[in-house]
Image (cartoon, rainbow, N blue to C red):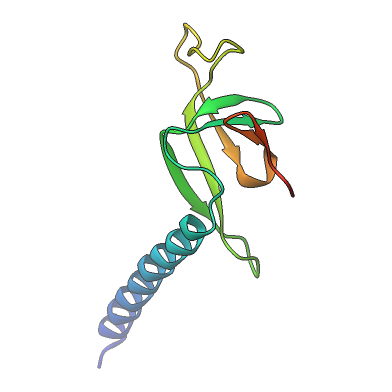
Length: 102
């Protein structure tokens, strides 16, 4: 085995590991997610309608969800400028008007 072959095989193994780890993180985070697609999340800073859910994992901490969607007004309509925001699971105050217990 040459050094180039070793580095190529190692890179393939690491890429496969990252892919499988990301899939596992998403699976775990979605299983424990308090919100679903279409829900209205009242965060500390923004209120959004969820259109995308991602998993975030920090070193040594179980993965949590982050929610992305258009920012909405108090009347629950999107802002005219079409701006979007991301709300981390830790920053959720209410989901669909119901207080979230921490």
